[in-house]
Length: 119
Image (tube, rainbow, N blue to C red; front, side, top):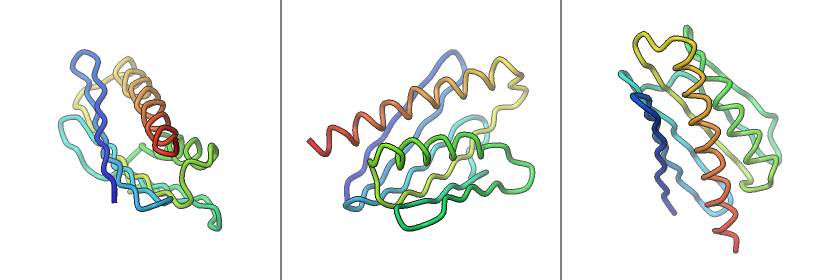
C-alpha cells in the first residue's frame, strides 16, 4: 500500500486529501473547512458502472465525480473510490468557486503523482 497527502489553500479556504493505493486500485478522501465530513462518494472502475452518491443535503457530487472521471478516464487506476466532505460556514459564491478551483489544482497534482508512479 502507498499513501499520498495533498493540500491546497487560498485565503481562508483550505482543502486536503489523502490517497491510498493498492496496486492499481485507489481510495481518495477529500476534506476541509469548518466541519470536515463525508458528503458524497463516487465509485467506478474498469468493470463497474460509474456511480456518484450524495448524502441528503450535501453537494459534493461534482467534486467526487470530477476526480473519478478524470482518474479513470486517464487510466490511472483500475478501481477508484472518492469521498468528499468540505464545509465552510458562510462561504458564499466566491468561496465555492475557490473550493472548485483548489479541487481542480489538487486533482492535477494527484494525476501527476499517479503518472510518475508508473514511470
